[in-house]
Image (tube, rainbow, N blue to C red; front, side, top):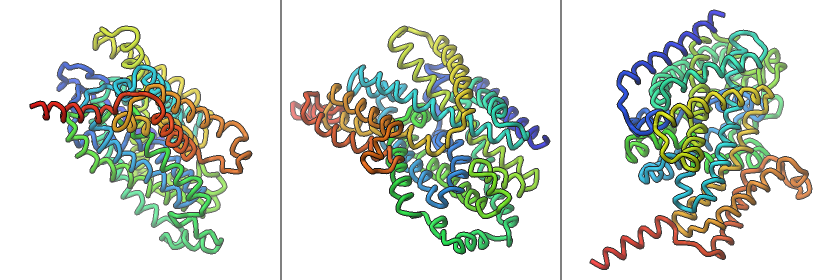
Length: 486
């Protein structure tokens, strides 16, 4: 109970302090709550991009998958790090330079309103799906603190998650992330030292010997087995890297930056902030399998329980406060970005174009509460975290390639819409019918499937159907024409 009190006191205290400082220095400006008046400096954008995609998946998903598939689970971290690079050097600067508030608004400028609506629907569904996983992560954390059943613990976690974002919005999230990054990594470094000392034999040698004696050396190898490498790892890399690069969740911090240059600079900070975390959690998951008293708890609770029991209470509080900060940050960004899509792309775009900033902020806060409540209800069903992420990302990955085609090749609204709908339909059929079995192919390669369909079908349709030149291609041609006329 002391650990619970300490962690809640830290979370509430730092949230209120940050909110006070943000409010005291706040300047009136457009999109202040949702987009921080486009004022976040590069280092705040960097840690926010890093922590936005560093939540329950990296904490509990990788503890779980490290238990099941060993070092091969780190491919998820590599995929997310690559998605940050794509966002920081490509899609982020594009959307910021063109002054769009959302990614669907970007799709509208390239293709039109039909593709914008598809992008809204797909992104909202995927991001809300992520939100259900983050509530699960919060529940696991508070179950560890309290000994409660996981379902009531999820509710407690969701309440704190709302506090993280509800008061001051995007600027609050950004500055909280700056503080929490220090807490997270200092706790991890100290924690892994203590954890290593407590392992049987006081080192990782016992863990290595366990797998070697069981002829499971692949658990210690990032290349793993061919089934895991080609079935899970590379499929996850394809789906996650390209999905995050067009997701409003990751791009919202980029859109909130003070310039395109800040986005590019922030990437050098965001990648290590995000990528290094998975190394620790995968290693702890691998270790949990080797100790019988924890292995019998199963993949979802073995790693977390081992951490709590192996470390002194003060370090447990520190480390779990860092884990909580990571999950809360992602929970907050998923809540904020989904609400932003509803406000900007549905309410303002379709129903009330002249809505004031106060109206938009009020609606955004209401939506954050509703989205968090609905995600909390679904999160209690406890789907496997990383497997769910792979399926969700397979819906967004096609949007990246459609956007690239519309920017650099051809803008065909019909070709874009048809390609997206076909890819999504096949993704659903692949997961919920016997189609993989009929084709004698693995079930969990959704990323390959949707991207392959997008590339092949998209190439055919964009080549065959009428459309305008790509947005960037057209602008380049106009500039060249104007230069020649002079």
